[in-house]
Image (cartoon, rainbow, N blue to C red; front, side, top):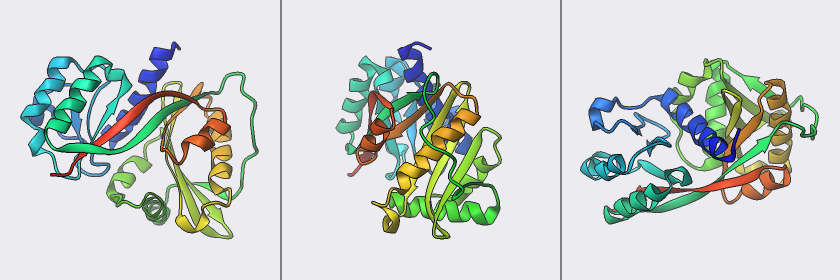
Length: 247
């Protein structure tokens, strides 16, 4: 896979997951490569291959978006990225947070840890509610549990819950698309931070991805998490800027 193809695979994995959670129909916007969440994660985004004309057309529907809706801008849009940012800022959107798209090749890469029995794959309704509660607590935003229930039964999705001293402490989600395994929602509840829980969880995640016979792991790292991922061997790809309207 070329570097450009890997960049696209990162975003395709992320946006395919969002689509599985539910999106508005194209008839709502009439912009083929634009998608809007019907609930959490409250995103409005363009596909990797969106055209300049399509991006310009967002001006016609931008005030139909819910105020909490987040619009990501990623490097794959190339010259169109600056156009989208300009349209957003002209319409009252401001930069909310940034992420770094990253990847790890699973080919010729040594296993860095062994499976931790305190990290389990969950699927029961009670565990899904616990997972959602811990993830929401970790990221300090509301997560619609119905969105998680919707994808929990998908054969390409795995929800991981880490326990410390018998208490649920951290979450992660794996989502496979082709040879790529996306890692999402890696969060540690505030009371367990600084104790190595995130690193232990990521060791388990990487080992589990080997078992899924994927070739690459991709993720979108927050500023807080990027240093950990770099130490685990992940390499940066491009920036993702996330905008939200504040007026």
